[in-house]
Image (cartoon, rainbow, N blue to C red; front, side, top):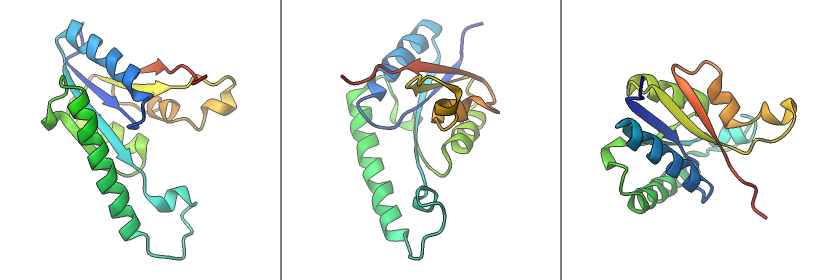
Length: 146
């Protein structure tokens, strides 16, 4: 059965262009809706949660910058409808799963560097998203920059 609604999780780097291209081709061939999400992680998570200062202003700046970059990304990819463009705040796996369920997506597409060895994979967002996903997950292999 063809997919009905594809959710693409992007990190807003140049590396997400091939992921978006693959998603667009798949959505077009399936006549599926296409949604995009970028997750802004709480700064306290990056610092191990033990931060002796108020990060709220930095967090707001980080969120505003992500919104600008997401808007620029959408302009570059006219196949994405602005109302299918999501910016979320939190832990990537949880937010991607939540949005996939909320939007009734039947496929999540993420980029993967395909590092070798299980230990290297365990920390990756792609691997994280795979576990407990409410639908199919497609990991698009990203080529290493030379």
